[in-house]
Each structure stands twice: as structure tokens, then as C-alpha cells.
Image 1: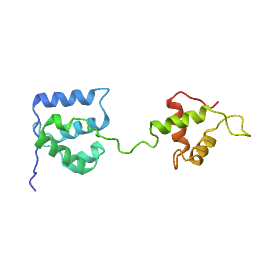
Image 2: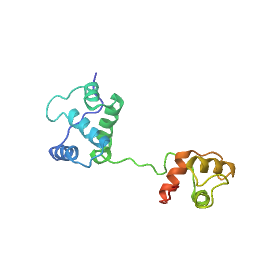
Image 3: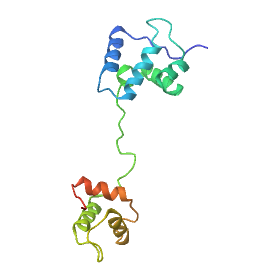
Image 4: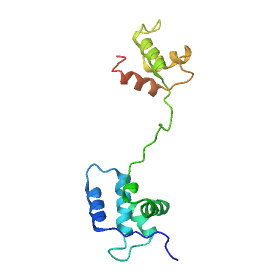
Length: 152
């Protein structure tokens, strides 16, 4: 079977990939892409098959194929870029107005029969007052922590 995409790295590209792999602040995904290209390089000899590259690098064979294809079609800079989302994958549960109401509630007096607010008590009170229809304790805790508020 003939390969559709063949990786032939120049000497400067190989040095760039080696330096990127050796960098201490290089993300794991970028490091794996560099290793895929180095193992698929035909300029230093016969490369190993894509299934072997996938098992050595700890990625799927589709990842190896896509990395090689991206290099051949778009170049090295395209392969080594960080892919960032324009919008976060999930919308935040608590917006600014809700956050302000939660903080005001936490800073206020606790309900009768309690000496202080707990995260569980605050969570149930937020749902009871319909500030947010449903919210988890961890969301309430992280909202308070973001503003350096402690319930102790």
C-alpha cells in the first residue's frame, strides 16, 4: 500500500523538534506530536509503521495519521500550535449578578437555629430563594473561595 503523506524533515526542522521535546515547559500534546514527526521522518532512514508510532507515543493511529497529514498539508508551525477554543466548552453556572447575591447571602445572618452558614446550608438556601434553579456545593464553595470568603 502506498502512503499518501510522507514526512521528510529538514535539518532545521529536526533540531526545532528536538528542542521542543527537550523543553521543560512544552505541553504533553505538543511533545507527542513532535515525537510522532520524528519517528515518521524518512530523511534519516526507513520510518516505522504508523501503528508502531502510535503505540510508542501512546496515542491512537488516527492521531498519528492526522499529525502527519497536518504536517504535509500545512507545515510544521501548524502542527505545533496550541489549539484554543474561542468560547469555553461549558457556560459558567454562576454569572456576576448571581455571584453577588450568593456573596451577600453568605455575608448576612445565618438562618434561625444556626450559628453560622455552612456550604450545604448555603446551597439549599440558594435553591430555596431561586437565585439559581440547581447548584452544587462545589460551585458555591469555589464561588466563595474566588472572593477569599470563608464560612468559618
